Length: 245
Image (cartoon, rainbow, N blue to C red; front, side):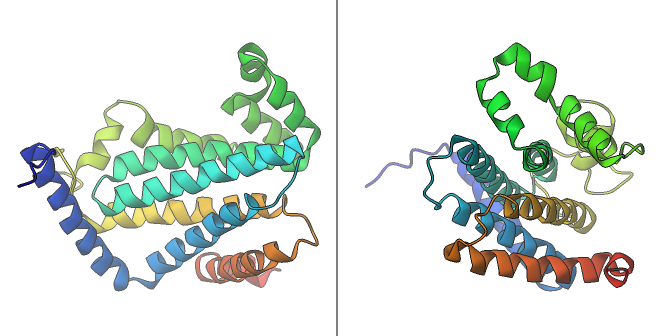
């Protein structure tokens, strides 16, 4: 007889998580919006997976590949957590995706920065490539003054990244109720996290697409698939922007 090496209470917790995952699947099956967010997330992850298969000795390109792999792992972990009832922890991982996509955007806009980043020591990296420096560089490049990038980063930090009173909101099944310990499934928070995941996935896919070799045949199918899903996503969630194109 094989002895169960997982402590009993942890096994019970895991079983509860699996039940919540089934409940989440049923909720998603009834919501085409959530299905589209997850579909575009899968497409962005596929871009990261295919890009890593491009054989290149270019060390700068390899940086983009590794950053893409980082987003793949982060999305996978975030999906697993949110479907298992841990939305706050899922959102914390999405903050990492946000930082990574900003860095990819910076490097795609100025590839010469990749070599500087590769060779930077900790002091130089924090001076030139800390999250705040990257956001400021992108805003300056794009002429943005509204600090939308900061606001999004701050939102993830307040609700998931830092221990504060606001962070307890994501531990409450009901808005005005008490925080609970352990996982739970609730429609509003599930939709909020998956929606943010979809928005981030669109950005990740856009940036990874910029690093694909133009004539690499193997890269074309996932790029086309992402482009189609991205357009469907824009048409669904930002119809005004889509009509202006």
